[in-house]
Structures are given as structure tokens and as C-alpha cells.
Image (cartoon, rainbow over the protein chains, first blue to last red):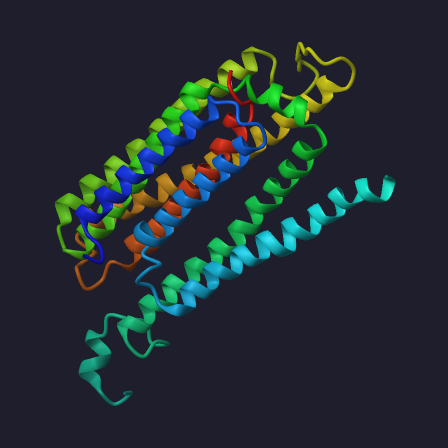
Length: 94
Length: 224
């Protein structure tokens, strides 16, 4: 069962379950953990869409590498370096 | 290959490729490269959001509570459903079921249009409530001083991010319309459906962008 309507339906059900979960968790005050949980669920949903709907699980290695490169650039170059600057200013000021 | 007249006249792929599989893989890789640039495009907005939310956490929480959580959540479900039907489109194309493909493409387009309609209702309501950044922006805040300006920044990001996402969705709907037209003419067969597959990648990507916008814009307010 690499792909097909049955698998897609299961992934779709999982996505809706995760949407419900993120909605319910957001209604409970968990402090900073609210954001962590919301983003963790978003990453999980993305993983399901990419692996099963976009067939990255069965795609060739070039596509997987391109996908990975996008996230390396986003997370490490764009986010990490920019946030390192903004978050680091507080330490310098202190 | 040049002297082979039969192969020249019946080939179903462009001459720069060795075989149909290589052409298909090139098309897929091309879409993935484009999606990487799209990750960075939306990534810049996400970075701006992260920086300002870090700087003004209280104002962002309060501003986020003014978004329409019910409509936003329904819209997330609508878009996830459209991704499901898009995956079924690709499967219908792969198995060579032309009528099912056209119907599923139309259904996916309808779900995308439904998302835009709900988004339009939200925007209209927010503009009516003076939440559109600009001279008419009004934000009664429990926090004195700069909180209004900081909340305005949240809504700048909100309108730009949801606006650019909606633009991507409009492009996706037009794309699927073109595919539906050609699918109805019978251009796609079980051995050639690359355009459907590649458009599917784009559609799922637009869905993924929303998967991140939903918690960042609607859920940061915490319990309402």
C-alpha cells in the first residue's frame, strides 16, 4: 500500500484529528508550551502531507534532497541567524 | 537515435530527454526547486513574524484574539480536504479515469474557492472592525502606550501573509482549471499525467503554508 485512496483517506483522517488536537490544546493555558505544541503539530501535519500526498516517501533522492535544502536554508540560514541577532541583543544590553 | 524515423514521430517526450521517465523526473525536480524558493519567500515573512512576536508578545497575543478562530479553523479543514481531493486527482490521473479526474479537479477548485470566500468574510469583518493597518486602524487595548502600534504590526503581518497565501491559492485554482480543461479533452493518460502530479505538489505546498499560518495567526492568543 504505497499510495491510493485508502491510504489518502487515512492520512486525511489523521490531518483532521491533528487539527482538532491543536484547536483543543490552544484552549488550555499551558504557557509557553502552547506555542511548542501548536508548532509541533504543524510540523507533524506538514510531514504527513509531504510524505504521503506529495509522495516524497516514494520520490527519488534528488527531490528529497531539494526538500531538505529548503528547510536547511529556512531554519538555519534565515531563522537561526536572524534570531541569533535579535535574541542576542538582549544579552549584550544586559 | 536521429536516423530512427519511427521513434522521432511517435515520441511522447521532448527531444532533450532520453526517455519519458527522465522528462517526468525533470518536471518534478523543477517543481521542487520552485517550492524551495517558495519556502524562502514565506520564510522571510515567518522570520519577521517570529522577531516581532518575540519583541511584543503581549500585543501579539491580544491582537491574535481578534482573529476569527471559528472561521479560521473551518478554513483549515476546508484546505486539508482540498489536499485530500488533490491527492485523489493524481490517483485518478494515474489510473486513467478521465471523468473522475475532471470531477475531482472541479471539486478541489470548489474547495479552494470556498476557502477564499470564507477568508473574504473574515477580511471584511476585520476591515469593518478597523483592524486593517493604516489611518483607520483602531485597537482598544488593555495595555497603554505602544500596544496599539505593536498590535498594528501583527495585523500588517496577518494581512500580508494571508493575502499572499490567498494569491497563491488563486493561482492554484486557475492552474487546476487549465488542467481540468485538458483532462476533459483527454490529454492525460495513465502513462502521461505529469502536469497533474506537478500541479498537485504546488497545491499541497499552498496547503502546508496554511498549516503553519493557522497556529501562528489564530492560536497564539491562547484561551479566549
